[in-house]
Length: 87
Image (cartoon, rainbow, N blue to C red; front, side, top):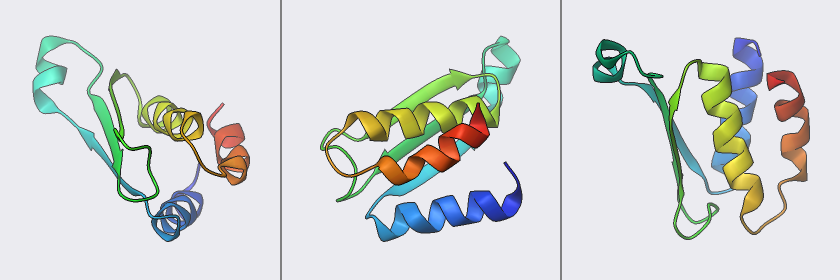
């Protein structure tokens, strides 16, 4: 996934009422664990939000977060294009 695709994805998530934060946790690197964590919240996200952690790469973390959104209510079919790029 290139920078333009990431930007488009985040803009579309924002338009859908979702705030998505993807971060790297230095402590997890020190522990030898997957350092990537993502959290999705907001009126467009599932009520409990989506939180995934312990992923080894940005791509796997983002893919898991998108899968979590897809499992919630709402029309998430437009995520297909982005998920295919992450596979």
